[in-house]
Image (cartoon, rainbow, N blue to C red):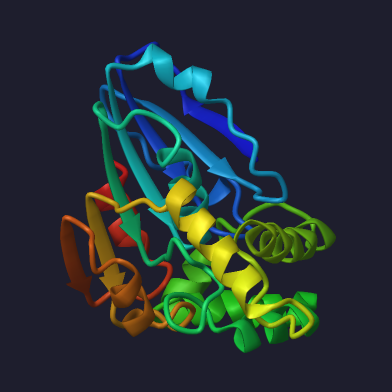
Amino acid sequence: MKQHFIIKNNQKHLLLFFAGWGMDETPFLTIHPTDKDWMICYDYRSLEFDAIILQEYSEITLIAWSMGVWAGSLILSQIPGDKITSISFNGSTHPIDDQEGIPLATYQATLDGLTPASLQKFMHRMCQDSNAYKALMEITPRRNFEEIKDELKRIKEQYFEMCGDYSDESIDDKVIDDMIEKYIDKYEYNYDYALIGKNDRIIPPENQEINHEEAANLIITDCAHYDEPMFRFLLQ
């Protein structure tokens, strides 16, 4: 994945943001938190993460959104959490799941039918209304379409490599159960705060609630999947 510093002033507090699928730093460049270094992570075609960077900081606030909730949980489950406050927003640690994330049929249909035009429709669905969509289009990510489509494909491949592809009827159910158990033992992570937008039209809010039922603090909001005011609140 890409790890990009938006602000690097050698502060002791790091704001670490795991963005969603298809994102880059462009939509978030106008956000300038005070007294913090500010890093954004995106592009989950690879899940490699340089955790050595985190050793420089005495305090870390980690915000994860959308598919970044999954990517962030993989990192958080592998590093000491004593100096980290973690917040998820409109995402799931089981991102492709009929009960806890995006239903597999929906995810596969999005992948199979992805075109530049359908990508724009997807981004419109992320937003609360047409005005929010127009505002997003003014700061839309600067990544090319084929790269974004490959990322969506690789997310599915990597997730099922880790926890098993329950849709593959050629794989024995016990094998799948064993893989899921190993995945949970290694990667399961409960965020300190889980914010769920009841107007999220990308990841069903009811599935998010199931996924985050063990979170220390579960907060229901009126947000859509992408919500610029919420990002300004969380990332300041």
